[in-house]
Length: 236
Image (cartoon, rainbow, N blue to C red):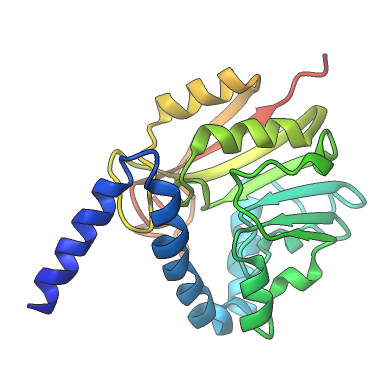
């Protein structure tokens, strides 16, 4: 009986995500509650040396080095409780996450305390004070957990300096789940990036060597298949 009720609730939630009016409410009160519970329970792993090695391996696989953004402003979209972008030594990390205040309150070891600035708001909310402020924008395993993809991409474009770049890595899938409210195809992503004004400089598939935080054999962060996009905002 409990399983049947749970499945019925999931069906209602996924249908609700198809409704433009309902989806931000479902996302705020259902999906974000699940995200918070996950991060609170995951805190010990995030503080382990093994986790830091895994994250360093992932960043290096994507071609990043720890010192390449020293003294640069980096906007981290969906920074999470671990602030994995602290991989970049001496970078000025601007963390944007809807649960940032809750993480800071409920997770004593929250990595967000390393950030230069913190904005506790959805990525869909535009932060006017960040206009053309970022040398680099990054988002890893986040955008398919949001609820309005196009708004987020427009905001990232708004935050970047002319000529600056963004790196966005997330799972693409043609279905919706409670924790993954957006069905994203590679075609939709490319169209959205170009409509926002970006040039797509590189696209990669998968996550390389298998990581314990990825499934299976490094193919995805959680659902579907991982794709990574390197984008550039034109100088003009």
